[in-house]
Amino acid sequence: MPEAGLPADDGAAPESLVRAGADELERAAEAALRPRRLDEFVGQRVVRDQLSLVLQAALNRGRAPDHVLLSGPPGLGKTTLAMIIAAELGTSLRVTSGPAIQHAGDLAAVLSSLEEGEVLFLDEIHRLARPAEELLYVAMEDFRVDVVVGKGAGASAIPLSLPPFTVVGATTRAGLLPAPLRDRFGFTGHLDFYDDEELERVLLRSAGLLDVPLEGEAAAEIASRSRGTPRIANRLLRRVRDWAEVRGDGRLTLDAARAALAVYEVDERGLDRLDRSVLQALCLRFGGGPVGLTTLAVAVGEEPETVETVAEPFLVREGLIGRTPRGRVAMPAAWDHLGLDRPAPADTLFG
Image 1 (cartoon, rainbow, N blue to C red):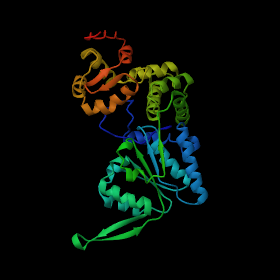
Image 2: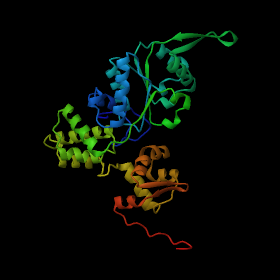
Image 3: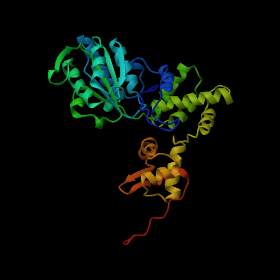
Image 4: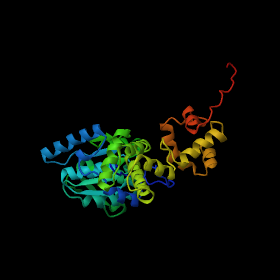
């Protein structure tokens, strides 16, 4: 996640070392690697500096800080930052998620149990049910919830005051948040992908916590295959450690890193089996496209949603494939990465 781990999107994704989501078991493994304070958090300098000002100002005033919204792809540190916010404020953290709150009553129960100054972390806040979302508006702005007593024409709403608290919302899809909810956050921070140098620092820090000898060249090799995501970097680090302990001498050298990542089919650009299958199908079976998503998914033996949400975002970001109104197309970089000759441009009426 950001050094260790991060929130996760848990979708229906195939097992892969380079997926950005995480399951419960992996979150437990990441917990030991999470930084506890802002000054330990690697990367995201702008968000870190802005957040430091917000928290310090709140502490100076002796009041709860404004509500915080953290957005960005999975695996970059949103959950970690929520934990750090609570730690910096010296208060406890209450954790829940949008999918877990299906009714307004579920959220009311959580809010009514909060103590003064407590931090409520809402992961995947964009998936909050609409009734709960409307209840959250009032709670965030006026620190109260309206408890409905009775049914039908005799029902009445009893306002229940809440102590000041801070909501930290995390989302991978900020565009899905309704404007009224987004406007109630006093601070919004967007987390970007890490560069290789920042990931090397993450890896060296994590190796120290895991008490494994990681050489600088090995750290650079792992970082270059981590898709700019700390969670993936730490996952690859653990697999390289496994290889070094079982088949090597226990030291995480450049050769050990390359050998381990070859075993797990993560290539020098960070592509895994599914990524390469998509590129090979697009280039070899369909001549570079365009080809529809469903047809492409059938060709690689996966569900269309898996191809679209797991493989495609990284391939598009790396300039390996493109999305057009007619379907997916292979970009020149895809042919080069697979070591294939690019097809000659098709003749046109004027060409």
